[in-house]
Length: 434
Ligand code: SF4
Image (cartoon, rainbow, N blue to C red; front, side, top):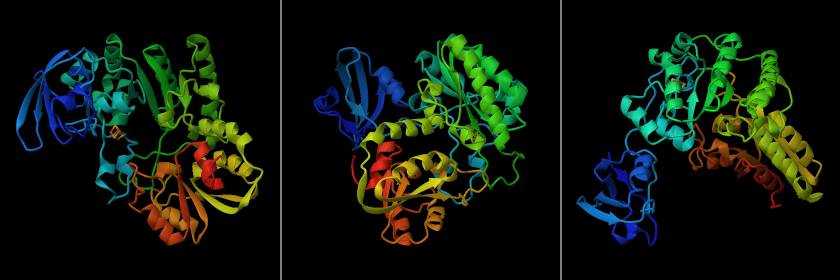
């Protein structure tokens, strides 16, 4: 385990002492560097001995004196230099267990790494932590963390997660509270398993820990058509989603009086499934759960509303097709209807059924190239807009390793990619900047 240095800031201390991109950082003051957290923590000191392995293999020991907190100027591509910590659970709803076979190996990785929770907002379960991990979390004050709760009943949580250690969630939360660490939490809601009374208890228990528990995000279980030999689960019905939306709105109003914040937020999918309107921005407060798919629809609608005054009355004749997952259809339809009023423009949505994953998977981010090609059909010379969320790690590849170029070749379309913002969507549809 060693940290590959991939960049050196110009005129930095690192540049001055001869450290180069391609060298490895081994230790700082004798502490091995397992991740960027270690680097940031130990590199604050005003005096240090850096152990650097040069690209040619020789090891340098470099003595540095600097101001406390002054940056050394090292950059890394990776956040974690040893192995990413994987989960020890067998959750009944685990999406990885429901993936079709023969996909890219990286898609089957079940990460559950507290470092990525702090650094990038990944949800973790706390059930794989050893004492050394706890010491690092509390010693470095890694706050806030993002925790998957699912429920607070010990036996039920252990059963849902297929791991006896998952039963200790209340003790784990208490330990975080004593260390002054705040958490955002999520519940993956499965009808008949952790909804109803169980959900009431979960909400009440987490609310008792406010303000250490900053928020609860509730997302629906995602079920693909590949659930061979897995626990029998079902998706929410539209009526159940509607009841949940109403119940959570009542709880939110109570929390607003009690905590001056909504505290609990439902995933966009529940509103879409229920047929109820996407709530206004105030429902989401500071959008603290947006990475969890909570509030994205409202952000898009509000961004679009702000751009409306910039829309042209007419453009040169143009026919455009917008690819979307089925769940975003209703939200996008209002936007496309408004754009369609522009003279010269013919804009049309192309909802794509996710045959690759099957089941109730309707989100845009999980569409595959083959399903998109089938839905588009022949679009020779036509403009097609694809959301960038379909692409993995800034590449041009989709989940099934079909590329944008493959889609263009198969359909004859001219494809533009959007970045998820309303401005990017509108500009791609119009074929011009606003
Ligand atoms: S924590 Fe559960 S849902 Fe997440 S990867 Fe592990 S088994 Fe799957």
